[in-house]
Image (cartoon, rainbow, N blue to C red; front, side, top):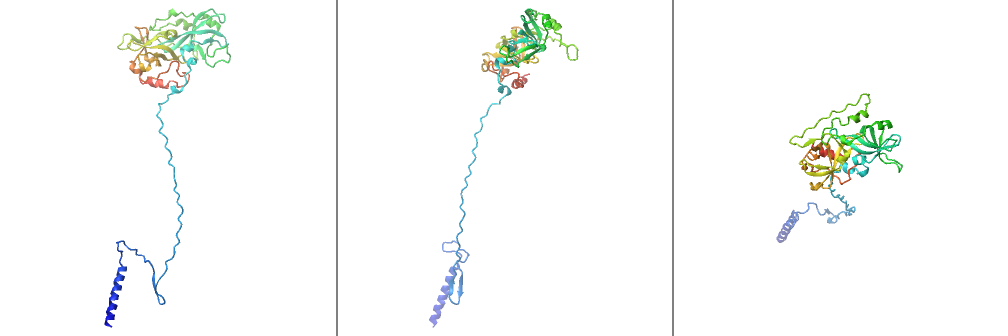
Length: 355
């Protein structure tokens, strides 16, 4: 009996040790065990200790996840840098039809208001001091019974008609002169040799013309003539004068153009004039090989940048050749249409920085 008690005691101790082992917070590999009971142990009188079955949990079907692939918008290639387009570059050239070129204006016939041709344009008198076309030299003869002679007609008495004609027998561009036959017959004859020498002051070179072509303002008072200012040599120069006097357009076209040292620089190809006012805006010159980058190009030079070389009896540039660096230039006969507004914005911007 004593042995039985001892055996029971030993079994109790073993059972307690087993229970203690089951209550250990970690298994043999040191991983903490879940604190949730794995099962619900219930003692019933009938069955003793039984295991209550776990509630079966139906697996929830997860919605199918579709990977949304968003295309990355393509990045356009960086635009190539382009040079700024100036107003002059986008205005087309008009070549021989450009009515703002003196060479073209000299090719137009002269008509009266009765659609009768009364003469042809032969030359122009350019006043260098006022930078204006003073007179159009018209050859009248064989028209309206007038004997052939050259007449200097004031530019303000003329209108350049560029509207064109639908008739093949009539010119596209003509000068319209609002004068009577009597006025033409009584006009003094123009004599080339009576003009002052190149570079001399104009003074009263046209007194005979003015006395015939009397111009009267709107209020009825006589037009006041601008006094002539006699130019003096430029500082530091004995030969270069500011512009003065008068010159014929035919003498200017084809004239050599020198730099400020007297060296050959270019040839004068044309003049740009406002057809409505007669104001001279630019000399058109073709640069020779003196400036390699501009050789063979046409450059437009305002009269403010031009002087008279009294030694060579030609026009000269008032600045050093290096001042032409970056000047706008054109291919021969490719000057923009000078009748379009703001056609020379790039030219104005360039020359304004020098003067």
